[in-house]
Structures are given as structure tokens and as C-alpha cells.
Length: 411
Image (cartoon, one colour):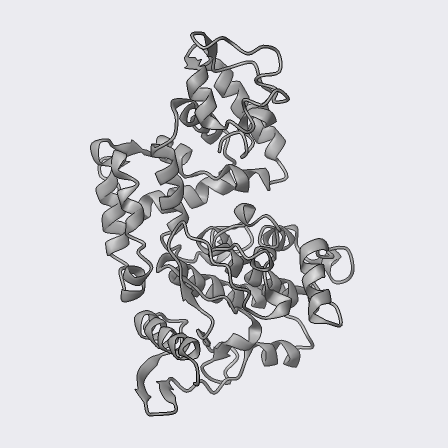
């Protein structure tokens, strides 16, 4: 360690290891020592080798059944890190070790040297990680926790087919592939892979980071649901509810209509998250969210200032939110757009929206929804006429479903 930056990096790694050690799938940290030239980190001995070696020993890929047991462990530990406000930033098979050589030995995540604390709404900008596993937004120097989910998508792709989704002979070529190329799901063995597994990987390898599943969401995906895994609290819920309680009446009305059209597969995740908040008499308030975070607090969560998000959820201090409104508050329109049945969902939601179209929405409220899209002359909602300042319009029938409920329109 010869520079102030490298010294700070190692100290941050030790701080993260110390804070997160104790989770079943994180390498156990015992102590750290420092002399004039080096820092010595004492950790658990894992004798089972790397996940990469296991993949190679199996001929390059896993069966779906065996891949699930690997992916679930990765998701569990990443969900834990993300709730604590820690981005690993270097997820790859080499950074998962088996505790022993037994076939069913548990894995431990290692190497937090590139990891960092990240506040809920902050963006990181340094390009780090391993080329084959780096997310597109990392290359654009603006990313958050979703970058780790891309890496898990790459790992799962490799587990299921034995090849990398993005490949080139040079690092710059790999980066171009990550930015421009779509993964191949046509060649062998993909035709023999289940539709659920393919959908799982596709929803992680979405180049739009806002449309990717979180680790907690991924644990409720149909591909993994038969394992009956416990699902942890998801920080995304806090972000979405924070936006909802501070949104305009127009946006909240649109989200409530959209929530009535959510597919059952998506409701599984929402029900789980609602139950984790331990509702009282069928409702949650700000206190439920505070208690939920406090139950999982570590020094890492404090360092990442995760609790700051509660200050922006203050409107919930004076009201209670039942499950139906929680669904409206906790859905991501970006993620719904990524579903194959999005147009049907939007059409059904639009029908619900029209049924309640007797409510009037002022032009000022429309402007707050999205000045850049809903008020643009080309937007379907405004294409026929623009009311004068003192007019109001119906909340219903001027826009087609996809135009009204698209993520841009609800931002």
C-alpha cells in the first residue's frame, strides 16, 4: 500500500467485512492487523475451491436444478448486502468459495476490495469490476446496486449454458459487446432450458438498469419459487413508497389503477414485502418501515445512511397504508414494462382508470407528473387540445393505455 487511495480502499474493505460478517453466505471475518507496510486480514478457511472450478469440473455448466441452489445462495447474500447499502461491484464465479469439497457445501462470497457504501439515491461513477461481468451503466459511469444484478445475470447465464453472454478478444471489445449485443438464447442448450429460467436471466440482463429485478424480487421469480426460500426485506420498496407518498394525485391515481392489473406472479413479491413490514390490522405506517430497517441494522447500514430515506417518507407518519395502496406504492412501472404481457397489463389498468375518470385533474397537476412527456405536444394525452390554465380535464379517456402508464409518463 503506497498511496492514500489504496490505504483507504483496504480500510473500507475491512470495515465492510467486519460489518457484514455473520451472514451465512459471507466469508467469516475474524480480525485485521496492520504494520508499516501491510494489512493482514484473518478470515475463514474455505477448502472447497471456487465456483468457477466447480463449473469446469461439471463440463462447463450446471443442470437447472443444481444451478438453482447456486443462484439462490448468491441472491440471498446480495440482497443482504444491498439492504445494508453495500454494492459488491465484482461479482463473478471466482469470488464465491465452497466451504468444503462436499457437493452440497454452502458457498461464501469473498473479495470486498472493490465494494463500496452507497446511499439509496446516490450514483457511483468509477469503472470497476471484471470485464465479462460489468454492467452497461458502469461503463457509462452512473450506477447503483442494480449493477450487481447484471453480474448475477451473467453468472446464471454461464451456469445454464456454459458460455459467456458477452465475449471478445480484447477488453474494449468486451465492453462494446456489453453495450451493444443482446445475449444469445437461440443456440444449444437454450432450446432445452425452461422458459422460466430464460425469463429469469433476461430480466437480469436488461440493459436498462431500472427494469432489472432486485435480489429479493428474483427470489420470488417463478423459476425459483419451488425452493420456498425466505425472502428478505427489499430496499427498493422504500424507494418506491417514498416516491409514491410525495407524488401528485394524478400519478397516485394512475398507479392505483395499474396495481389492480398486476399479474399474480408479481403479487407474490409484494405480499411477501408487505408481511415483512409486520402490518397491524392490515395496514402499515412509517413506523413499520422504521422497525423493518432497525431489525437489520449494522454499521454498514449506518455508513451508507440508509435510514435517511425514512426522512423522505414522512407523509406516512400521519396515515396508514393498506395492502391495496401498498401495491400501488411499491410497483415499478419500469419493471412492469419489461414483462412480455405489459401491453395487456396497461390496457387492463387503463380500463380501471377510465372507470374512475370522473375525478378532475388540473393542468398544474399534470405538469408535475412529467413536463417532458405528458405535456409534450406529441403525447397522446395532450395531442387533441390543451386546456387553458383555469380548466380541468378528466383523469380518464384522453390517452391510450401504454402512453398513460409508461414509466416515462409516470415519472
